[in-house]
Length: 360
Image (cartoon, rainbow, N blue to C red; front, side, top):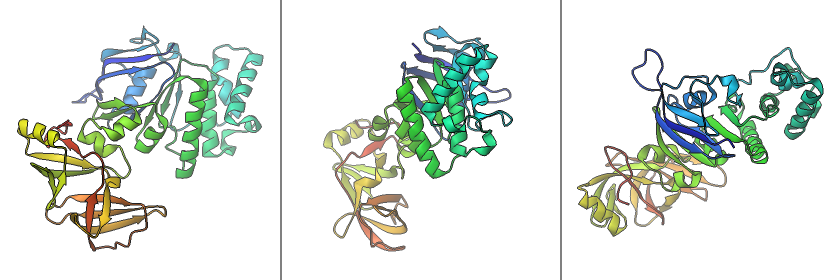
């Protein structure tokens, strides 16, 4: 069993005034695919390196399979690391690269060849086993790095932005392959990325970090449907959720000069808490362009994607930017004044100062 537990795990770099990872608590189940996501400097790679034994744990603990990893060298943790830059030996063949760690552990030639060939079949690398890395594409090199990890049969895979060096199309293909492979192997995997789309499509659960602190740890659907705070709301989703500073009135919230209805019990909860201004979160797909009533907005950009389009607008008086999705090609043009009406769906409410979810 390879459950992973972070308990108040913290790390601070020398000569730094703030923690790179601040009291991180995570419970990762055996066989689960967990993604750590966040902007640059959020501590996601540091958290992974702490698990792998490449960074010291200054406070708290990390355990794998119930065993405390504090002070345990990286080589004794039974983990396999897949790096962003592949880290392949250019003078060795694909087979030699994949089997090198087994050779260093004293595994016999026959067993080593069998494991390499089995992994190559899984990764569709059989025909490339005698080639050097320089003769492979970026996606093939990444599969070699994956194969090197697989042949070790570790308790845990640690993957640090392994797709960052690939082009957009190959990233989509390779992330599908990695997710499918992990499901087949059932190995507990911790995967780091800055790409929230990658996180949402690959992870069983996703941990969102900001400045070393965990913001929310949940399933992709829960992150999208019920973000814990304004940071998660704005980070998850493409385009991001519209976050608008809005005045609270008896019937809902005011956007521009239009009242957008909100459930009465939620408004009552805000009034009871003395909150008269909120940060309102509304997804782009919840707005539609209309010729009738709605929020007046000026078009700043139209992003045509073929099957749908996104209209980027500015509300004149408040200055708030609002993005709306249209499932048909929109006739709106730059500098047009249009009306946006909210479709059915939740209006997310966040405290204007703390950013925490309120009114539920």
